[in-house]
Image (cartoon, rainbow, N blue to C red; front, top):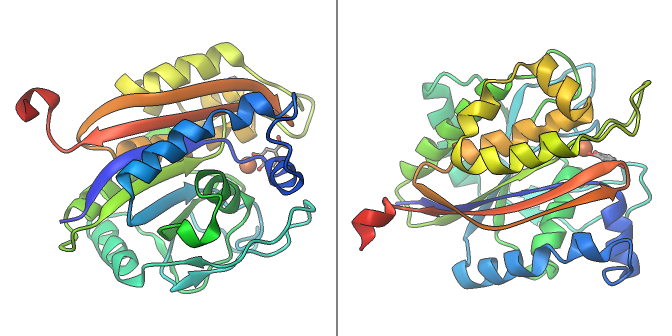
Length: 286
Ligand code: DHB
Ligand code: FE
């Protein structure tokens, strides 16, 4: 049976791609952010997931205002990246897992999530940058399934809907007959607002509360309305719904293995989190 071995959440600012290209990992501005990743890479090296399911929000590369799905699941053998205009290098294609994708799509539909299935899907910086941070060597990346959640065109799905969507993903993976180790990655956040009168808005006390609650009490975060989340986290801080979907997919015993918080990276409060998802309650393992 397939199993979710853990969850990762990370910020996905495009300028990280430029810093990677220029090798700025030790630069004083970037070091506190990049220092979050060696422990995550060590864990991935140790646990060797076969598949990474990446919950992210497309920013206009694959979907635009003319047709905006709420939940879009990739079902391709390969996912390409293209120039989005941020000046970051275009990455090579990422390998998919169509068989697991179609299982997810079937299972999510039976679970009453009316998702959009995508046999072609371009992936943007919200997908490519976290993948590059976690697997700097492209050839070492596991197979991936991109799942995009709308944060661009209102109405966007509520935090509780995204948390329950994640739980449905967790159930879908658990019912896949092949022995696969799956890591679920949520990208975006934490607080930031890129436009309007609150451009540059960051809310560190809200972010720190989220970093605590996402581990032990995700339902508390899921109970926020969309408008309250935007008020507290900024218009683009609504990307926290990707963290909630990731957390929902962890249905075992969850333990925090690593977390960092650093302000700012570009206009964004950068949060990074690694959660282990033990198959059984810890007490039962002993
Ligand atoms: C920035 C943050 C984002 O989440 C994004 O998608 C683009 C830019 C930023 O802070 O620059
Ligand atoms: Fe974003």
